[in-house]
Length: 619
Ligand SMILES: [Fe+2]
Image 1: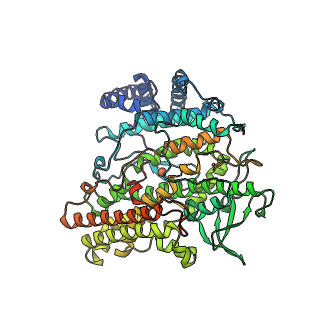
Image 2: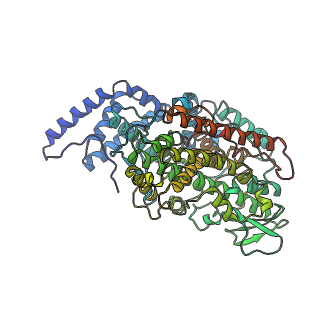
Image 3: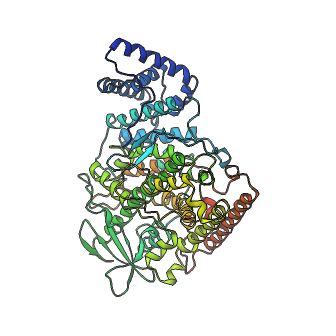
């Protein structure tokens, strides 16, 4: 497993004074080298008033190889930053809403990050995406704790400057390490407090208006009505994120035709006061909700049973949790995008046509995946605290989801569901998603066909073979399960590129744009408590903060990114055709949505509408 590297190596020759001198010299040089970049890095870090002396400390920390010294520096750095944080704590929210006051400092800290992000966000367009940089064999990586063989790059070619690349990477990552330490130092309060039932709508509106307005949380593109209705469960299963898991019900007879099973989460350790996840909802061919098996109760609950409301809540929460941790974070970000990002940057040079065509789909991937690891997935990171898992349960879940990944094409995935032909004509994954898949497939067939006219051109491309192996071994970090790629061929390459493009655009839209499930504490959440069918105030706030932090606008796929592709007239034509094909899909989806409610489409679905796609998982 590669070590996390430091750019400045000081040989420990046993002479303490030489070491000190060398270290001081390096620090001075590093500070001088970064120059005005320091201000930019500092203002990007939590909005804290950071002074030069903190940078000197950071470089000292980076430069020192001695474990004892590093640990003492780290403590000093952490307490220094915590003091800084305390001085601005009142900035967290100067005039909080009465319910917002009830959340702990840890939650307020992440809300503060959201407000800094919203204030400093700049409009990035596809025109700003730079061409690939030369391949590197010196990238440094950070492990995701508890997940064997999963590493993220510690930097991003789109965000790190060429000049002083390594110094900048080390400083930014040291800042992030300091941020992790803050998670422990801040106040945590797990005791749940709920919105009062009287005037609940007004109380929620007031909290939202005061703390989540002005672009902090994206506007939903579609809505569900009353979440507590049986029909809403059905709409989530057939027209929402449930489509990920919708399949023919196994071992059931009579009217039950389909199921949406989240019981993979059952048995994973939760904190005291939290309920175990996991529920399987069963539906008729007419999409009617029939019954729900709840893991924590180990029984089937039916409409009319006294636990019916709770069973529906357990299913909604388990589904949103599984999609967020599994389909969004682990599959889309950390497996598909991360693996492609590492393999492309370490195995394919900047002039390689496959590296060039992948670039638009990998924009910003390194930065977002590294930040997700540090701010969300560490012990007491935001995502861990939003769930009901112990950290052991949280890590086991991530590990399980990493190893559960299955490489397949969209048509293969649809076939494995064993839906009736009638149902395939109705659900948006098929009616809208398959045409998106086909548009990407057609583009990559023409692109790969142009650069590799014969099959033999593929097999003799040494860089491409190394890339393919690296993807299959998930970056070559000793993962327990391979990616599952077939042998490299023209067809296999076309399908892999289609899978990458589809997953980071349409897949990210389906699984990452989920604000509509979290706008009310009664809609869904990522935490369950026994006997309660709604989120507590703190969990509700944490969910909105996550949605805000991961929902800022990014470059759209329908913008112009032709500059990233090889400058050939044939490629320009292929690009134009792809744009036309996606536009046609979009028009078709718009038309279907305009006709809602219709017999085949009772609610609007925007998840596979190309006009909403972003180019990559850059947030
Ligand atoms: Fe995302």
